[in-house]
Length: 549
Ligand SMILES: O=P(O)(O)OC[C@H]1O[C@H](O)[C@H](O)[C@@H](O)[C@@H]1O
Image 1 (tube, rainbow, N blue to C red):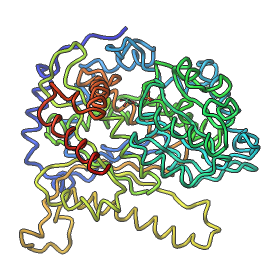
Image 2: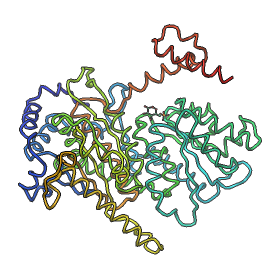
Image 3: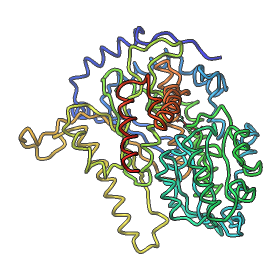
């Protein structure tokens, strides 16, 4: 059963938290550390190969206790039970949200494991060179055609794990991604590839997303031309296309052979789908054993989240820290800063996971909210961001929360390579920079020694809060745990705020009106009735196109 929820801002705990924040506003992180040498001991959690340090958050023990009480008041235990019991937590679409079920063991999820086994058979055929193009060549390149959740998760994880060695006796194909609807990516990817040795994965939960269908059509035409076959050729479809979707009927209508279809289900949200066959590019990167290891890491985090008390619970504390920053310290943005370049695509993945899930302004009951929900999230590889937007973090006018990610161990497999010593040194350099930045952001110029008087333009006020996440190492297992942690964190926040994190109606309207706009661009006379700006822009574009003709 899905529990009921009252309006949040009239809770007495909410008022206590507001008062607590008002009192603590004057506190500086440097004072908190000076006053308490044990602060780190009380504000860190170490679980599932991840250490989270919350001690550089501007949070007292009192604030933390109140937040934990708020989680209780918001019936977090019941909500987690509802999620893991498969109740209809997605109320606007009348669906469960069972992405966690994708990482359950075989006995608990037979349907899931049937698809994993089908996926494994395909992965083996491709990696062993048994999957052949229509002219008999082994596959050297795989292109994932998808967008949103059907692109960002597989892209991020496949990139993060590409340093792991391919399974013995298997050759990993190069993996490419094409998502953008304007065709710029697909055209560039196709320029480099040979149609005889290229396999396309058409990944789309709905199999109706125009971006993906247009890119897939372009790919199919390119193949047909390059191989001298008909667009409708069965052998072209059999040898060069795999479809991954929750809509087998649409896949079949498009031309994907039943044997080339991998399926998942309505109860997996697009942005939560990398654990399903949507993760095929990840499995092609790390092999199926590696993919199962990633599922195992995520499953360990599911168990952690279900069983640990809130204060020792990684996703729950991460969520409560964010609630504190957003609703009580009024910090409007969070920067995600990985100091390991393999996590380069994590910020974009989290932008979708968090902002599409919790960028909401009405409660589950349809009431407008009078408090903030998801902050603006953006990010970049930390060392590069230092040379770009860190100036604003250090000396800008706004408070920003930061999330630093780093790996304790790296380059261990490369120890025999000539560059091993240099690479180890570079890893240490990146980690040193990560620790230095979080220290300077927290303490400001009080981190400097000796303490000297600085002119105004050189001053660092500090007191910018941050969380540091340290992965033991970046492996399929720790990556799985990290991503499941973020998924549950998003759910916990949604429970606190009383919103549905599993729909995305704000995106739907944009898709609808884009169809009307296409008619306007085809013939600007259809612009009648539109706002003046849209009409003028459509006419301007038409004029420019005519002048080119
Ligand atoms: O996987 P698809 O059905 O093609 O959907 C791709 C994407 O479409 C929309 O933009 C949704 O907002 C996303 O949540 C989704 O991931």
